[in-house]
Length: 100
Image (cartoon, rainbow, N blue to C red; front, side, top):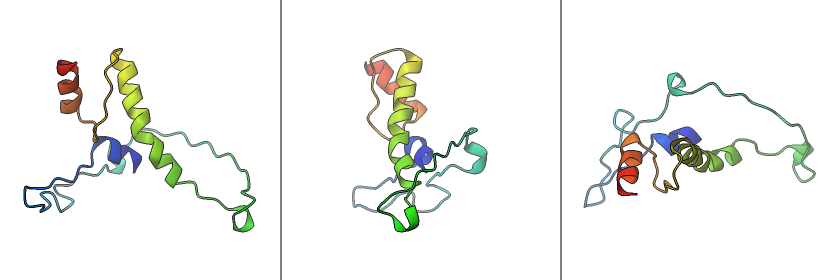
């Protein structure tokens, strides 16, 4: 979900506020084939406030994905150029570098 939010997903509207990409054919979400290999490291530690020590694990990883990808792109191109608009598309990176 975080990779899709950072790199692919963009809801587009026309001037009247109607959605221009309402179906999965136009609104691109990543599939399993689009995903890089991911190494999962679980650290088991009970939450004293959760029922039977349970706590959420999925939501927090979605929040940090887009900034991590933006910082990785910045480090890879070795400039002080920062990307603030999502999704981070190749076109947006190119435009930002040409206007930097």
